[in-house]
Image 1 (cartoon, rainbow, N blue to C red):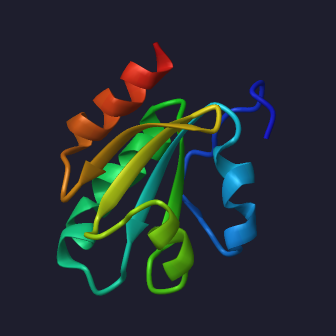
Image 2 (cartoon, rainbow, N blue to C red):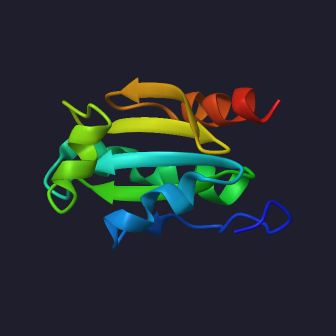
Image 3 (cartoon, rainbow, N blue to C red):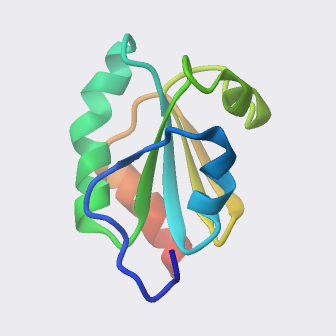
Amino acid sequence: MSSTEAAPGEPIQLTDADAFDEHVADGVVLVDFYADWCGPCQMMEPAVEAVAEDTDAAVLKVDVDVHQALAGEYGVQGIPTLLVFADGELVNRMVGAQTEEALADAVRQTDA
């Protein structure tokens, strides 16, 4: 995605771990490491979707059960873990349930 394209208005589900770097290469991307069985992850879903819809950031959902190696590579030990990337660089890490406001603030700080 070039930086002139608008970020998608809904979260992107990572299907191919090899595409991860491509997804986080341009612009601001919030990466949500989650699992379907994780209660706090489910509680955060509306906030994650709102960030995708209401900010210029893209949101990438990574199922840790499917992408265990990727979770290990980024040191994910608890879920939800949310990482913020800016042009391919990891700039913020949040572990545990976050409010929509906290997620939006993390994205905005990166955007500034």
